[in-house]
Amino acid sequence: MAVTEASLQQLAEAFILGFKTLVPEDLIKLRSPDCQHIFAPSSLNFPSPKSNQEFEDHLKSLLPVLSSFPVTPKEILINEPKRQITIWATAIPHFKDEVKGGTPDSEWEYQGEYIFILDVNEEGKIKRIVEFLDSLGTAKLVPILTKAKETAGM
Image 1 (cartoon, rainbow, N blue to C red):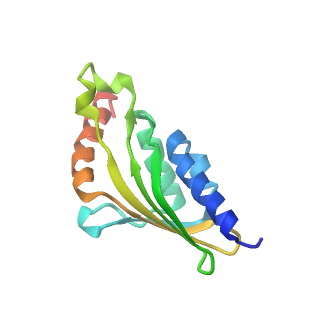
Image 2: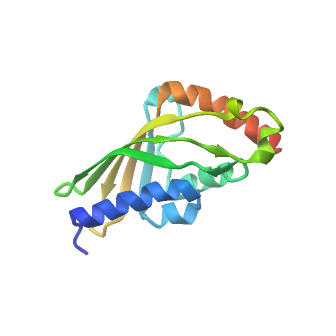
Image 3: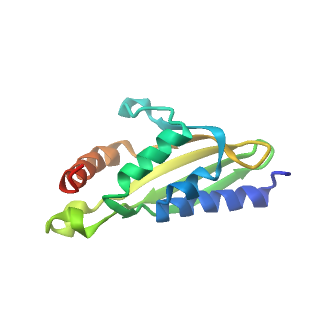
């Protein structure tokens, strides 16, 4: 399969859509079997890299508390010769009502900024993801996720 600018654009769009639905299989099917997902910056001390199974487990751990985590691209840059996609985006988690415990929606508000670098193999599958997280935003999101998981009994 020839990897073209159009196929890379379609892959980017499918990748982004996967966060809206949070169906693990929708994101995993875009990856090569040996894909590695790296979280950066390293100062956040997130376990990295994650294999497909580890990333799928991570997504499944979010399903009891999040209905979606839609990613909105600011820019999508395609480098066809290198089979690389860069996505600069924002994302807002949508927490399930049952984990909010009657607290005001304002306590659950978060918008983060992200950069994803996707390296694609010759077959058109993602072989490496580098996800740059919003450091300040992540410091706010982690306690919100922790609270949601506690409410969900996790």
